[in-house]
Length: 323
Ligand code: UT7
Image (cartoon, rainbow, N blue to C red; front, top):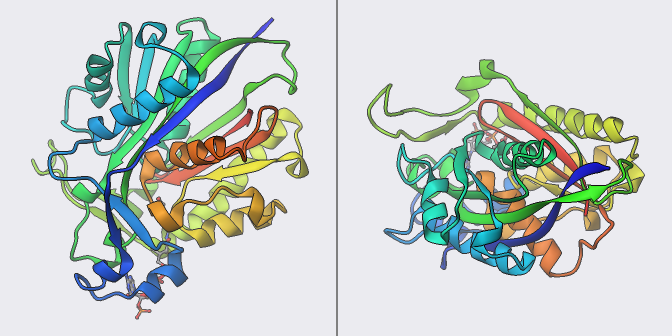
């Protein structure tokens, strides 16, 4: 018997306020044409005043639990992937735990845009070594709070939102025909700090700071690193690119998504794309996209799904899942 981590439900939540490119072009020197041509983004959701990352996370969690048909009593572990926690401490995950009434343990993971892949991989490890049976994994962000709204090169790119999945221990036979997470790979490279970071923090500046990015350089690394890490999870399982049913990428830029899919011969219809409506929601973008494609019936049981992300750190990773 092989223990597999099976994703049994997913849900998402987006704040109700939508900010369009046209509205942004009245705040900074940009245009809808530039943003659409360079990124594919048309709009993003922005959290209301007083609406916190934990609120977004909680709402997505409730939907995922309903979809998975589990209650708070079934969940024994919560991980929230976020770079925009409500407070420096305690973990946003413990706030969600309290609201849900979950007994067990909860903690945050901070790997910026790769946070969901890191959190899912961590959940998989806890499940496979028997420490947890049913895990709530959430990606939730309020990047609108750490943007420099006068910097047109970054403020047009990001949005707020949350997505969640329920991962549960399941008995498999140890082959790639099992449902669940079949392979995951994580990487980080701290030498690329300057290319994508927040220019503050409690122990360096006593302020939370703003996001800074050398977009062109990040783009270059993203295309290379994402292709390499997808290749790794394919090689780990012996699954070939033509067997991939769905690519669910981190939604940073449509050109990166298209480029990655092209490298593996994956047609555009097989790539789940939400960047046009959500923009880059960092750790929330993969579970938001996954939830959309599962609920509208595109992703079906038995499908081979690749999740991949790259972000600040740098961090990057991929998971190969049989749905
Ligand atoms: O999620 C974490 C990972 N993040 C990413 O993967 C993001 C990766 N990077 C990107 O998506 C792209 O590099 C950007 C969308 C950030 C930028 O696109 P680009 O094609 O690399 O543009 P660029 O940075 O080379 O800038 C081109 C021009 C510049 O003007 P000059 O120097 O050519 O005169 C910028 O000043 O576009 C200008 N520009 C803008 N113009 C209008 C930069 N931002 C804007 C803007 N509106 N919002």
